[in-house]
Image 1 (cartoon, rainbow, N blue to C red):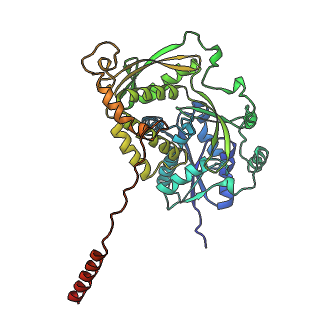
Image 2: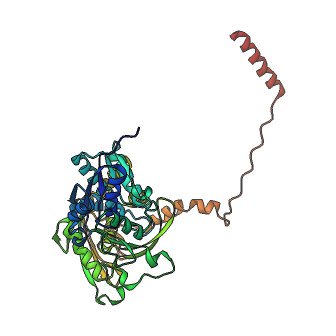
Length: 433
């Protein structure tokens, strides 16, 4: 006999899907439902009145947890230091937030004595994988319920009908055709006309970035300061992590920075299309990458770039809570020890260019790189270096004059010597026996 579920902690947004999930869980599992809304910077309008909505849907409690500071310091900054970019362009905005949200749901579940966890993710998306891998790592003893994989509801009309039947207030109809996810790092857009890959995004799609075509022609310059790979200041003024990111979002946003249109490979195997706005993040990645280029040696940069792709994949696939990320973070921490300094950027009509680079750990030296006279570099040293470095080309290339050496003929063997050696072997064998 299966264990009866008594109390469920539900990842709750206040939207239609999670609103109907509350009475559905009560009806199908005979359990109490505790809602958990996690504030990752999605905006006050999405969280307004959420406790009342949860109560109206039948929840026995609703916890609203503010984790914005942790999102930046413990999730966004590590991904930035790693240089992790998924599918060549995606700066992992949704992916980074999910393991933190999952952790908070588990924390509330423990506090409330829940014996199960639930989420409102569909069976096609990445988030179901991210949530359930996190739940499996953090709370393997708790059951996981995914209503979208069990119920008969297949769309908004079905959900509205179910809500009305259960006396649940129906949230206002969406004024947009798009499915959006927003946090401090980015805003994503999927669905609607975007499902046709031939359709360009409509002008009114975007929420946090200006159209580059009408952004200020003069652009804007900003200098970002780093300490050990972590952003700490803007134009010399040190700021808290949240304030720093919000400031860069405003600067990048009004200059049309950070828009991408991506066909991405989901964890479940299908391709999807998303439009992402990441204004502050785009500025930060550009500055951090440039500072690394200034202070890290070539071998370290190449190895770090290789591992950055692995880091991006594990974040995208929901494998945040694991030994693999901890091991990669240990490597990255070593690489970031000298990534201290500042980079000046110019943001103008959707593009970012480098204005300045400064660091006390710079490996670039003007006195070495100059084309003017210098006693630090002897040009004649390059002759021997190039001869050795190019040796394989001179030997193997089609213009090589080296003739292959004929193998030496084997020396003639004296039969009497062979017989004598054979006799010696036989004699030796006799002695050994």
